[in-house]
Length: 198
Image 1 (cartoon, rainbow, N blue to C red):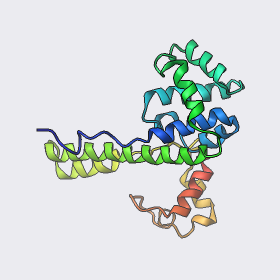
Image 2: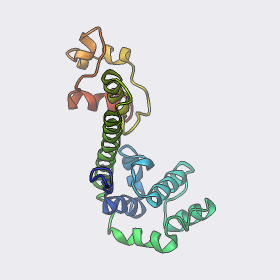
Image 3: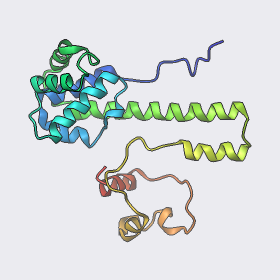
């Protein structure tokens, strides 16, 4: 008998993913903003991961971002057919009239990727709990280990740096000698992300 929780298609937002890629093609100046929000792994569809990676590679090589150069990059990487060929690249271009919403679409892609990550971690925890091959303590420890960051900070933020910043003075992480899992207020987490160029 199938399990309705694990047999479901993971959350994804094809339109938002297409909106990001089409938006970047329409307005290449949106790429740096989008890169601050998502990474290639945040895309659910493999074709979209490859296209986004190719766009980022072109940007890193100081190349203009347009359909011709993207086509050429994917062809050289032997990925053109994987992404749906020239026709799909044109579809992406036509999917959005402007790049104005690329940042908004990127946030939708990021949020959907976060939910997929949480579902994956939760499924692993459920599997381990039902299998009962470990003690309750071990399974509980795995819960903490299994929950992973969705996106890495570009620069690690050390506890020393956090303690040196007066904005964090009231945070339990700074005040309490023993570290453990604890909630992080949204405003403080935004500051940590900014410190880490996230």
